[in-house]
Length: 283
Image 1 (cartoon, rainbow, N blue to C red):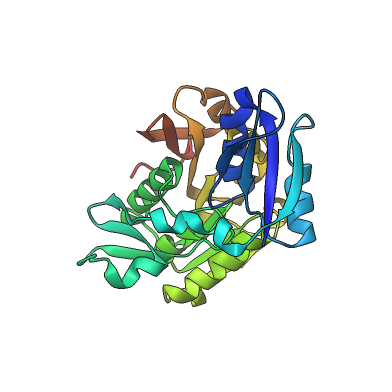
Image 2: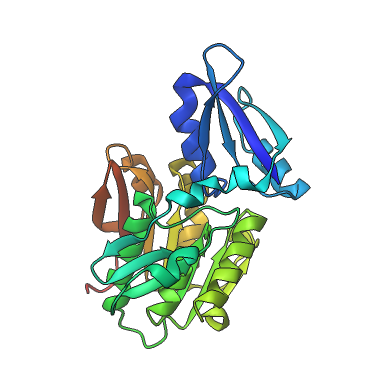
């Protein structure tokens, strides 16, 4: 396997880690002390494909150095020993696939996930908040056939949850090859492969409209894709956005006008916001 190593000033460590998680869709980040004074190294996995590595490098700030290092697979997957099921609500639990046989889920909606080299065991607050918001929207959906678009699907947690909750079709897109592969494999594991289409298709090239659009990405990315998020949202559709800090996201909501924020959910300093068009009927 190959590790993707980013060297950043210590003061940029949190910002860089958030970028790796939300913009590149990685599963885990390990912070190490580097050889450069005042800097730290962030070790992660963006896949072994040249395209994935090149795309990851191109997304970094110019002042952040990077390198690709060959490592043993056991080193990159050691975090799995510490994984645990994540109870999103009392009725929904995300289970690491390698713990499925030893996890008692009762009657809860259980989502089995193996992230591979992609982002998302479902334990990050933004994923949990987006999932809770999405399930609330699905529960009151007024249309018999609900179409969902998951922008930045990662390992497929949200897409699979939507399909398991009864949505008729889910389009899942990501910039990471590893994410598309993980979503496809996890859809099969959860028995919903027939309702989920995962690809590297850019949002700008997505045709048609959707009843529910999900975008759990960082604020700058949300602003950059705001026009397309509005374009793909159906007339009475609902948009759920996250990857937002609870204390600084008003500029993102302003960029999504004329969509109107209906409610938000917060956790650990993060927020997810549910929006609809201003002329959509109340639910």
